[in-house]
Length: 513
Image 1 (cartoon, rainbow, N blue to C red):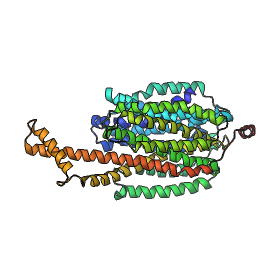
Image 2: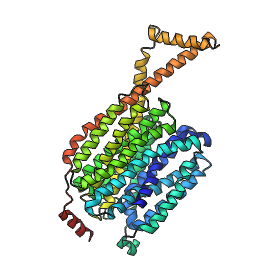
Image 3: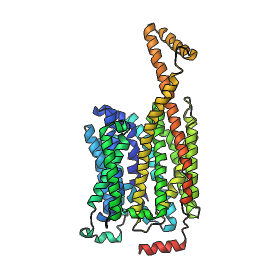
Image 4: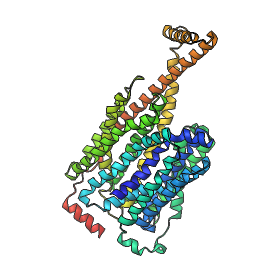
């Protein structure tokens, strides 16, 4: 457990820790903030490409060998990121780091499930879920402390000792599976076409989602070209993987209705979790003027609640509580969190966000545990690595879709709200004239000439309008995510109740044999 949690946390902390350091990285390396965002994009593209292939790669190289090699690649790339002297050198090593990190999530989950009996897998899901939730949550906190007090390179350097410890734990405590001792790689067919199509559509799609807003979407020629490539590659990938004898990604496991529905729900959960984790820090720092450290610290209580509730949810499922009740509760709690956040005012302080962020942690716990457990509940041991990989890929893609949607939605709503608010800032508005006069008088009393004071007063008034427009946009964002979560509740009717009976355990044992 210590081994897989350390590896999972290592990967997931790194998905969010960099977000708060982009300004420092761009300034230190002499790059624009837009170019610096490639530090995040490169990692995400490599990560999402590798995740669905983890089942095949683990079979080809042996799960322990692949797991250990991935940790070593991730750790070495982290060191090289910290010593990079240029932006594009850093981006290249972040891509390699993403290749190593892509294996850690799914392989950790597969190893953990193997270590537990069938009846105890909800507990395994809870343990794994703690890493899934806590890692991305403490990432901004840790990143904020480092950025505020140390050099940005430390956000990569801290991975090195943790990675060395994780590699030692894997080498010492993770046993090889029986078939790993006699792997005949010559007999294993490599699905080169499937891998190429996967890289093509996932890489293109991830780029579009990460960079679409900043590139003004389909007004950019290369976005159009990549969209066509993604669409053609995706169709070709689905057709090829369903027809070839040795697919790199076994899509046939999705014939299992439980896995298919759970994967869809996991996509939606990823959308909500990543959206809230993206919007909240930006809102707090851009509008509320929080420091990165304070922003991260405000997320910690919710992470603690999630860590406490996950084992409780796992035990409840182990005692027979149907997963659909927990999943429904999780979506409702997440919706309440979103609606609560949508009522914030410009004067809201840390205290206002305390309770809704606790609800977010509670909702995350009651969603992650049953969804993770439900995803593999109907799979044989041979199907499990592929099912886990597909489920994790959909969660990551859900987050990418959510962030892309929120970027576009916030920009659109900001423009609309700003236009509406400017209708009140006119020479005929007594409040606007009074505010401008008050600001101008205050500046002239400090020695500024009247013309300059008037100009500065207009700029300050414009700043107030922009701040209000952003606040209204973020409130709209949380509101629409809350509505979306309520709308997906009917999917619960398709979630089967699975009792972890003695017969089920016996059947799973026979499959394993």
